[in-house]
Amino acid sequence: MILDGKKIAADIRAEIREEVAALVADGKRAPKLAVVIVGNNPASETYVNNKMKACAEVGIEAVKIAYPTEISEQTLLNEVSRLNNDPSIDGFIVQLPLPDHIHESAILSAIDYRKDVDGLTPANVGRTVQGLPSIVSATPRGIRELLARYQIQTEGKHVVVIGRSNIVGKPVALLLMQRPYLSLPGMSAASLGDATVTVCHSKTQDLKAICRTADIIIVAAGSPKLLTADMVKEGATVIDVGINRVDGHLVGDVDFENVAPKAAYITPVPGGVGPMTIVSLLQNTLQAYNEYSR
Ligand code: NAP
Image (cartoon, rainbow, N blue to C red; front, side):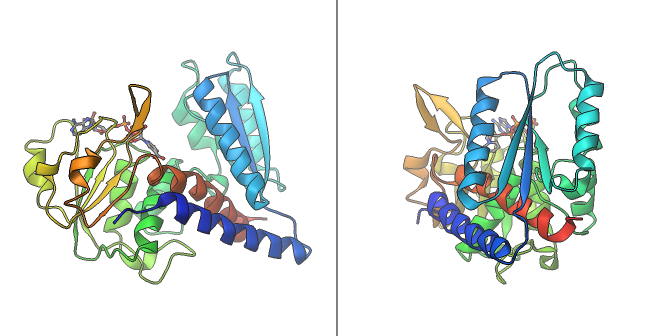
């Protein structure tokens, strides 16, 4: 069965639109997101524009704050501080990557975790590790939501994650091994967690043997057709996070054509994890508004 991220994301957008409309009808202000972009990287421009559009569609206010590449680290830190203290802003993101002269970690660390709707600050990641309420980064949140909406249980299951990045591999591993009481606000009761998680990376030995023992495989490596049919157990669930451009086409990290017949559930690329990632930012903004807005 195909896990239709596009459809689920549309369902969630409709739910958010309804919730925001109800807030406004109740005389409250709409949630507001700020997006800081530095320089003119075309890919970043596209991501930011998509995020702005997604906000507009659900009634979340969004403001874009653009700075030239030459901006100093201090000026950007000042902007972060201003946004941290602006009560009209519920959440903000600083679009990555940043120019080389700016230390990404210095900027991320300066963001108030209550407004960190990308869920990338050390404070939010640490809070997740310790089981405190936190905002979870978009792609892991989207993956978890997709599993939940299809009622795919993770309790006691062996989940293999390929990739150990800070934005996907590590946080998704963390989420799925959590005790379920840490489920995200708004998640269905069939909450996820309690999995036995193995995290693999480029130095892992015998990836195939490890993957063959997996009930759920999450691939976030950025390597086309890395996961082949001989690595997948019959009836496994396969989540393909990869986005690669091959011969002008968008492909994932999974050899979809040959893996799909063996998998009980599988995400396509495009139309699987990608749409869930964008909608997670909207959910995170609403979460920041509902839980932390001052
Ligand atoms: P990243 O920072 O590039 O890290 C890739 C990870 O995969 C690394 O941990 C690397 O191991 C591991 N890896 C690479 N090749 C491998 C191999 N042959 N065998 C085992 N492990 C391997 O990745 P990322 O930022 O998480 O992104 C991963 C992919 O997901 C990319 O294609 C990206 O475009 C896509 N992505 C999609 C979304 C979405 O919304 N769908 C969101 C974010 C990212 P080492 O640590 O040892 O180098």
